[in-house]
Length: 254
Image (tube, rainbow, N blue to C red):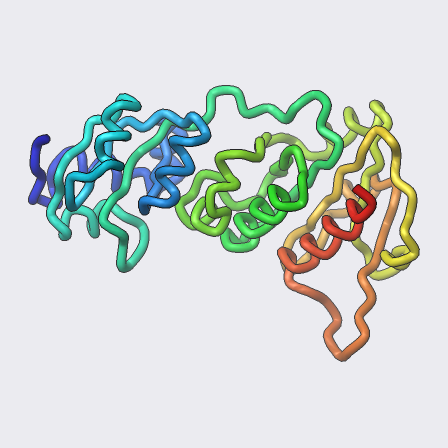
C-alpha cells in the first residue's frame, strides 16, 4: 500500500476538490469521511474510487476489495483532503448513484422547495429514511445533496433513500395526475391533528425555504394545506423539525 505524506499529492488534491459542487458534477464523485459513513456506503453498494487512511485495517481491505485505490496517508494529508476540522482517520471518494430515480411505487415522498441549509437537508433526509419515505425531490435552490455537510447530517440515509433533482412544479404536476395528494404547510391551513385523509395512492409532503417557506407556484399546486399548532410564543419551527413532525403524523397509521 503506497504512502502519501504531502498535501500537494495529486490524490489529496482530487479528494479535496470534491468539497466543491463543480468538481462533484464534473467527476460524478463525492467525498465520504469516517469509518461509519464509509461502511454504510459500501453496504449500500456505492463504488469507491480512492481512499486515504492513517492506518491499515479491515476497512482498508474492504475498500480495496470494492475496487478502490487505498493509500496510507499522513494526518496532515487527510486533514487537507477532508471537509471536517478534526477529521477521522479515513476518507474516500465514491461514485454517485447512476440510477437514483424515485421508485415507481413510491407511496410517501418528501419534496424540498429551496431548502438551503445543508444541516436541514441532511436531517430531513435521515428522518425520511427513519419514517419509511421512499424518496426526496430536490427543487431548484436547495443545498447540493452530495455536499459533505448534507451527507454527514444524513448519516448514511443519503445512500439508501433515492433523491431526484428536478423542476419541482413539473414533477408535482406529474404526480398529481397520478392521484397523489400534494401537501404543504401554511399558517392558514387545516389543523394537522384533525387527521386529514390523504390519497390511497400516496402523498408528497413539501418543505419550503427556511425564510420564505413554500414558493407561490408550488403552493398553488397543493391539494392539502396543513398547519402545526403553535401553543407557545414561537411563530414557526425549524424546517427539519417541522418536516419530522409532519412526516410521522401523516404516516402514523402505518
